[in-house]
Image (tube, rainbow, N blue to C red):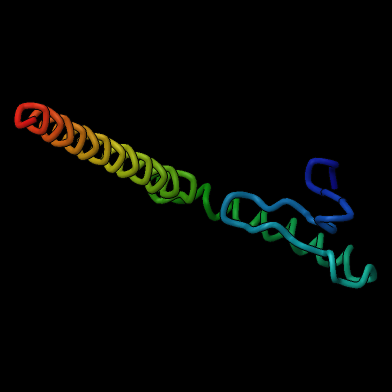
Amino acid sequence: MSKENTERNQNKGYIISGYNGIMDLDLTNIHEKFHKEMIELHMQEIKEYKKEQSVLKPTLTYENAVRRVLQQIERDAKLQSERQQAKEKEKEKEYLKHIEYSKKIQ
C-alpha cells in the first residue's frame, strides 16, 4: 500500500483511494482489526475492475463513457451561459431604449 493510496487526517479519517469506477474506501469508523482484510479486498476489486475494463471496446470503458458525459455537460453549460448572456444583452438594449424614450418625452 503506497502513500498515495492512503490518507490519514484528523478531519477526514482514514481513506484508501479508489480507481475510476471504484469509490474510495473509508475506514474511519471501522475497527483496525478489519483494516488489512478490507484493504486487500479493495485492492483486489481494483485489479478485477482494471481487467474487466481492458477487455471492453474503448467506447464502452468507464473512462470514455464518463469523458463523453462530462464533455456534454460542459457543452450544455457553455450554451446555457451564451443564452443567458444574449438574454442579458437584450435586456440592456431594452433598458437603454426606455432611457432614450424617457429623455425624449421630458
